[in-house]
Length: 327
Image 1 (cartoon, rainbow, N blue to C red):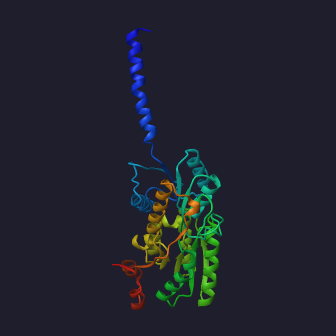
Image 2: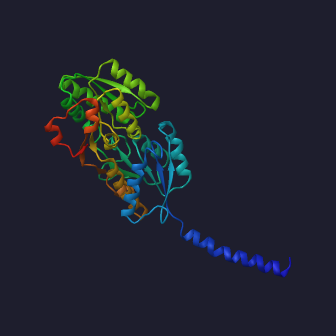
Image 3: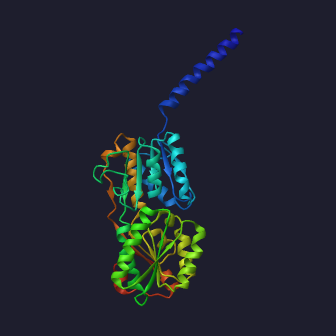
């Protein structure tokens, strides 16, 4: 090798060493986002997560990265996607639903997992207790299942002459579907109503659900608190109007997207809190020491435009209780 070539080679290597060292020193933590729907349907959740991270001084692209995994509504893909994030050695995993949290827990007992759930994480076996989770999981629990009977009551208050109602659940998410069905059946008996449980786990099921509601002449539909239904809020709202079915669900995304009514916790606020927790974990805190937060802010959102399209008039007493009225 000629002396000039050797000097050039040595100089290039020397220049590369500081660059490699700087890259190692400035490597950003990576958050694995285990979604439920698509980038479009989960956009509000992602925005809320980013807001929560920013409150703890983490900004995507500056000092933290987010690696997204989307099952596109196919929950059966979640174990595979969770395993992929573990293989990627992410710093933490954000689990957007009960199936996502269960898949992430099965994939790793080491990487911190922060969830947002509509079911009891203790009953699901995700944490030892709400105050002391004790493992690598913590997060936010919404009062979804417990509020199911109240949603039926609100719907019945709006359409008091109706005696037949439907309940839509996702059979692939039994942790929420079963307790929701049991609670609504009990509430229906108390109110002297009939409740028919309908199933949907893919977009293909929606048309059949609304056709069944029309055949049974249902007076309304309670949409179960499932992340799959959140990701299809606008589609469900449009179908409910098209088939003239008064519907209510937990998620404000449904009412804002054109649906009649929503009653429940604020999902975007829950994801802001989840972002806070992930930021704190990235700064060194342990999931085992972070109590599961319980969303206590309950909102009633009413969409008067949807009511007009359905030929319904909200009672003054019901309007007075609304936290937000969309005109």
